[in-house]
Length: 534
Image (tube, rainbow, N blue to C red):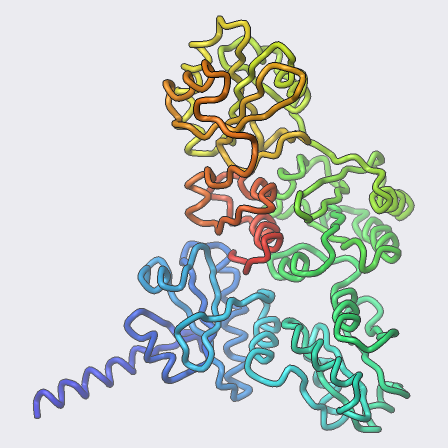
């Protein structure tokens, strides 16, 4: 009897562990399975108490939990302190904070990665799409008005026949869209209220022109393109909340205006920027970045800008190779921005590459100092064998390598044919050489062939010496993918993907402790088609 009582007491205690904080379940290894049994559909945030982005998410996450609870939804939100529940975090492959996963139907295996925005509305819309019908049916005008009032963006399909080809294409488009609610209207009163006279699709939004009516063939692909093109403002401010929408879209060419909101002519410059945006809708995304915000300083650094140099315009493409462009004119007028974008669209712009000035004593030390401005001249000198370390000032492995690299420079400083050099790749960019990780070691043998050999041997003085003395054969390999050598510090928080590697630089250009930069991490994850991990 005593044994039975003890078992019952333990069972009750186990269930009692499902405590809540602001409508969010507090989950641990000890109550995780119990939570899934009690609430089969749970969105779980794995967080770290010290993480700035986790802290920023707290109010929105709690608000979303409250909204679902108030609606009587069976979906719940939970959270796991991944720094305490390390076993649970490891089980679900948590490699950054916050990581958010959706467990559906009580299943522990293969939860769905959360892939939408960081606002309460984004979270609720995404969950409703995952647990309910992709398309809601509107019973009358009141429901339609409520949907529009409650949503930043909403898409309504006006169809008299729900079995029509257009209505079916509309449903397929809805199933493929996570971050925008879709609804179906069939009644005459809804048609009349919104002045729709025939089958149509209308996107309602709380910005710009307020609504967009689809004009084209009703196919899934065309409808998706219509929604993607119109669901963002003509000019969107870059924030942690808007980042997923910015980088999750199909438009990979982005023009950025860096401008402090406190500027006296802020409104004038924003008007000019918006005028320019009108002609490139669906082709180039126009983004505004407040240059006064502390969290945005890392973005300025990435583009080689200083706070005092703003306002400024830059353009970036997020294709296989990330490329940056700088306008010749510093004027922020609709005319100058339109001209800049037209030259880009016509392929007439040259990439903008950062370079420090050449130091006066660049060749006065055993290890020569290279920058963008003297790189080509030195490394491709026909009579020199040049061994270069591409480093980042903050990189721990680079710092460990420094004394060895200096000894190597000293050993070969009297050899007229060999040059040992280094270049800060966070401040200098080279079109002919793509640096994927830090430190990266490359050998440029003498000759006119402009060959490049990656060093893959031991990082010791003996290993480097053998490599140089063998003419780049002992420990070398043809230049190629060297992602396997990615800095271990970076690997500790980032998911590594071998292809499209140039984008590693966008977050590896900054100190490890600052790698939570939402811009850097978001760009990286979206280019690699992975879930964002902030």
